[in-house]
Image 1 (tube, rainbow, N blue to C red):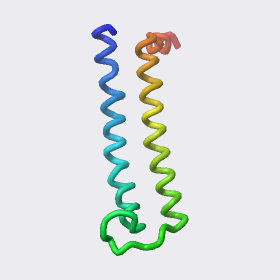
Image 2: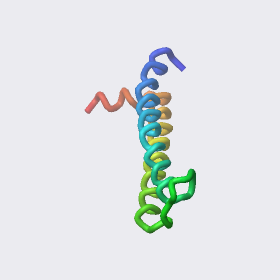
Image 3: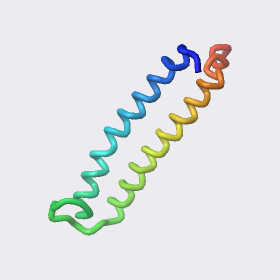
Image 4: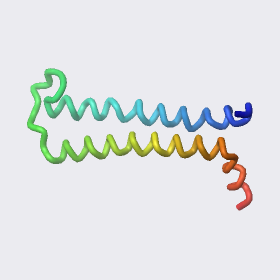
Length: 85
């Protein structure tokens, strides 16, 4: 791995970490509202809460998948191909 590649990987990693740090408290709040964790008094796990949990989890999985794809592109030198267009 070249030094230039390491610098190019910093931004996608930082953005991924920030998105996950943003989503985790939101998902935790939903779980608390549903009464699955903590002592929030809780309500039943309703369909809308379940949907929000699935969507939030999908965001985290999608961001991680995009990160790994981007890191492979950087290692393969594909980021230079985009400059041609």
